[in-house]
Image (cartoon, protein in one colour):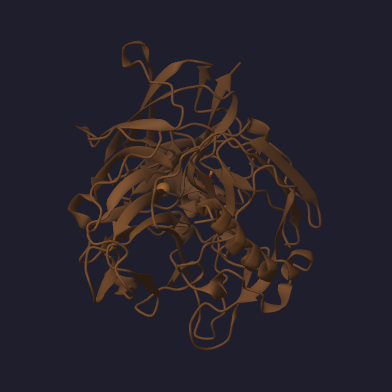
Length: 493
Ligand code: C2O
Ligand code: CU
């Protein structure tokens, strides 16, 4: 046993890295698609501790999405969708040189990580957008382990569904013992019969309803379906990192014939527990790591998504000799990141009320300081939603923060959804505890950065305001964010 797991990841990564490199200097990358071409069970390029600066190029390229017909022109990082997996060990320094080869200005946001505010990648709030042909260096210490992702925060309702997203993995100092790690990035594309992307971004109809959904669900950048295979050996233990990178779609995933354990939500450890009702909800932007044991000896089992009429995402196929004589039992918990416990007795209470949408009850809101009815907000401003009775333009310099907190302040926020739509609400720069959903206390009071709010539902969260700066708080249905469900919180000091 000369090889440690890490050595193995690095050598596997080196092989893949060689494939990926040619596209670094030319973002057009002539059809180069290092990740998508390698199947769904790939160990992806790692980033070594303290490695030299890594270049991430956002550009236009083409990639096979549907199994038949022509390739599709997409926007991707380093010539592929998803972009390269950025892998770190907790405590490493991320040092990434981003180059913009897109026909639009852009930024890169590191979803979930507690970064210094200036590294958060939000145009006009934390940095100037990166101009065409321009560059920006992101550099910070990676404090939190877990499954994260990166994507633009500029025109995200267009740039993300065109293909600009990738996974960022931070290994725990002591990783969970598993036989293998598998990464699944779920998303969708809206393609015509000619396999071209339908370029209908930014429609008010999508802003004001459930967001723009694609017609082709993707797994690691290529069409999902029964032809996508997760090969597993009897009694093997796999850690499956799941990310929903779709701009609007939620997934409700079932692993037929299996009973995986949830070990983290949004990268934060929870006591290992079976998936409730066997169906795992992944709202846009959310991640969950599961431990999947090959508890069957042979056969094939469907991985299903139960949302929107149901689709098969992939199949689990047994192959090979048993890894051990018996499947393993409940996994050990993942090490929890540093979180300051919230003292609810001395917490300041805040609220956030969401209104609007095309079917919404009459609501009123302020845009640029002027009070308007929601219909007027739509007609005059192309906005569809309000947060605490204000609607903000995505690209505006943010005017008034939703509320301010002192550094070190303990805070609860009650979110009330007065709309007929669900909203995955995401806070930058912090994790929060999910105390209750629809007034029912949650079993694990999980730490998350993105929480799904049911239509007409409510959610109670709590946090300690520890990271100074102005932080976005927005819906991760990116059409909703662009349609007004975007605001900021300020941590002073
Ligand atoms: Cu995933 Cu504000 O972003
Ligand atoms: Cu929303």
